[in-house]
Length: 399
Image (cartoon, rainbow, N blue to C red; front, side, top):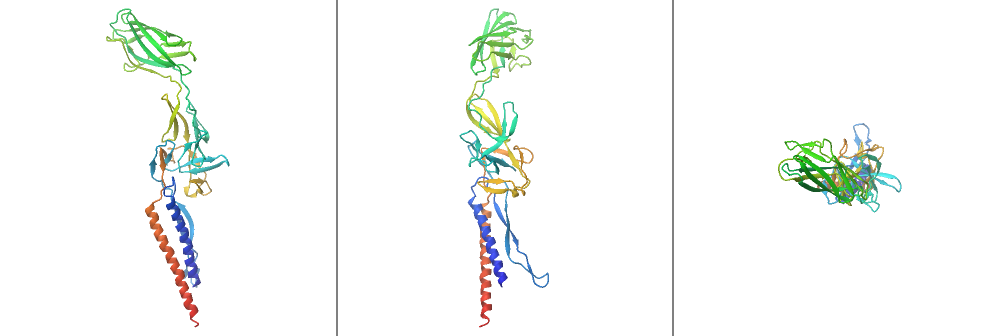
């Protein structure tokens, strides 16, 4: 009789714990990156009465709580630093106060007043810095670059120009192209062609600032209007600028008629295209993140500069991670040591930028579990009351 009471009590305790887990799941239905938990039950050892085939259980106990690590649905946001992992992996965040390293699926990140990428609790998101040459550094905090980009002086240019084969000696054709010095100042180059003979032109460069020369300066064409000289790409030298002197290669070798070629066909002298590789300094206007987790700075001058790549940790057993609250986990002996890599590589998922992973709580499933747990609790309470009534009848036998 006493045994049935204790079996009922164990059922009440176990189902009370199950109710707490279900309540936690439902409470976190809107928590970013939350993973559903499930109570695991096991029976308590049996008491043997006489023969081994006659065994009576002693009730139930909660043997553990396991997590469902299936990915939640992705919710699109308007924030570039909201990130979600489309597959296995965990973001890495660090508490500099105690040098603690944590892992999370919640990708609500933003840059703080110190230009450091942090989560909602101020923990610093870890990644790899990318320098101007595209080389990555050691694992560390992701830092937003300076608000002004470095200008690039012009070193190469192309122009698609046709010089009229029917032009008379002395006829001229003028065009202008903008280039940039080492300080990002714009310099206008006036390019003047003067016809010297049939199929022959000479070129002179006049800059808006300083002085300029072009070597070689003579352009000649064959009877098909194809350029025969100069045989090498001309070099435009510009001096007297606020920044360093410019030495610009005018790329003619291998140029096509539709892009960068100088031709001598019959028809109006005209410029059809131009390019140059310099640009001024620009103000930081925003950032973007791609599926590989690479952060790119976007500047007002149209340039884009990758500056960091987020790091991702993978584990042998996600179920073995230790919960720390605030959507944070730490590694344990059960989870194994983290294998740190970058997104969209073997073993870890790609980044979904401007997205957040929602909780994977299935409300329908939780409500069903809530009902069955409630009924199990009621049934175990009936076992206790029924055992109590049997004990009362037993005590009343002596009357």
